[in-house]
Amino acid sequence: MGRSSKDKRDIYYRNAKEEGWRARSAYKLLQLDETFHFFEGVHNAVDLCAAPGSWSQVLSSKLEASQDGKIISVDLQSMAHIPGVMQLQGDITKETTANKVIELMDGKKAELVVCDGAPDVTGLHDMDEYIQAQLVLAALNITTHILKEGGTFVAKVFRGKDIDILCKQLELYFDKLCLAKPRSSRTSSLEAFVVCNGFHMPPNCRPSLFNPLLNPDSCLQWDSLTEEERVVLPYVSCGDLSGFDSDCSYPLNMQGHAPYQYREPVQPPINPPYEHAVKLKRANMLQQP
Ligand code: SAM
Image (cartoon, rainbow, N blue to C red; front, side, top):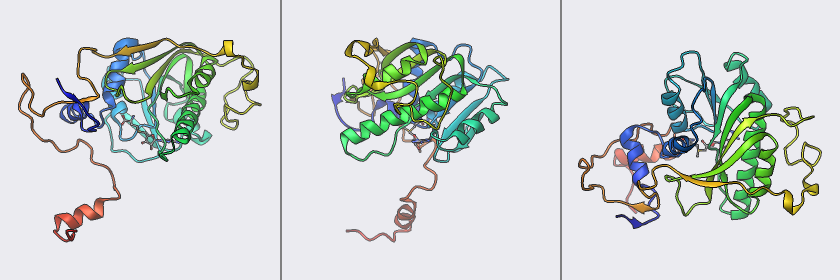
């Protein structure tokens, strides 16, 4: 049994390195699918906020059977190539990005849109939560342009105090919603994932990236919501619940497992800001403090 730790290099981190995923987040998507089976019947999928690309790797491995399908990854940052995945460097809050995604899918729409987006954190808790919620709304906004009627949307959310407002917004666009916490997502974190099935545009609502969804002139009049109208979503745990606990750390050499062997990261960061310092250190030119 491991002990509780805030060590980021946890078992999922190490397994991701050993199994070739670019980030430990891959397990979150895999574990969500174990419960919700949202990859079934998907030909076209879009990964919003995709870098460094572990969710796109999962999509590529799960959807590879279909030859005619396309996987599009979108991120502000550049990403190393993933076989079977088309990449778009762009901002998900921009209509031009939506248009480019549709162009890359030959005018077709996706059956699945996933978003694991995270803004740069400021350290101010309320501010970070607010910006994260805005990013999910931006993802929903672009999703209204690129998701097929009846399609599925999976997105990272934080279960902060405004989560029910966010869910109410999502409920306008989907038949069924569920909040889920995969085993690989740290229990100590407010992070959860909303799985939304059965996409449809609300009556009299046209997809637009001009109006922020929280704008009172938009589809929903927030001021008119009563307490009773708030949504309480089902909340489920998923993944192998007897498996590794993401809040614990485990010894490198575990009984019943092969001896631990260090491996280089599958995909090192492209042009990291510390690159120059690493070069100096390798050349022994960095002075010791
Ligand atoms: N799912 C990814 C994976 O498995 O490798 C990890 C995603 S990472 C947690 C969050 C990403 O959101 C960052 O790469 C960041 O650049 C991206 N992001 C944040 N705001 C964005 C925006 N407005 N448009 C596009 N990408 C954005």
